[in-house]
Length: 87
Ligand SMILES: [Zn+2]
Image (cartoon, rainbow, N blue to C red; front, side, top):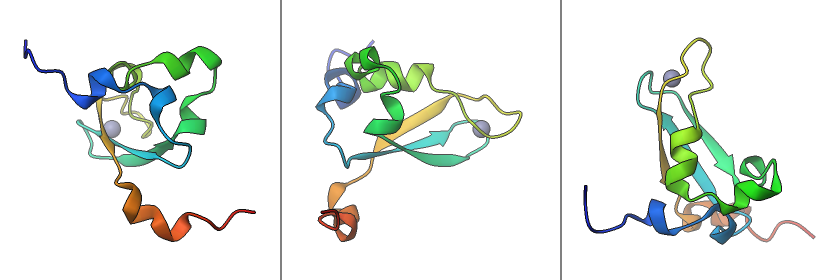
């Protein structure tokens, strides 16, 4: 066990800004997809999940796979073209 906590153990879903995206990649088949805070928070209590816990309970959505996934934070500045367009 590592002593230092990763960001996944210190950041909760609730801490994410609304336009933050998380990249979810399957360790088994390589399928990757994106999650937004709204997609994660299908129930109110899911906001309290640490990213680490979210990663553990998320499985690959690819047909017939169901593999474990790795979650990565997508840098917000890569998305800057999408910010500010909503009234
Ligand atoms: Zn997969």
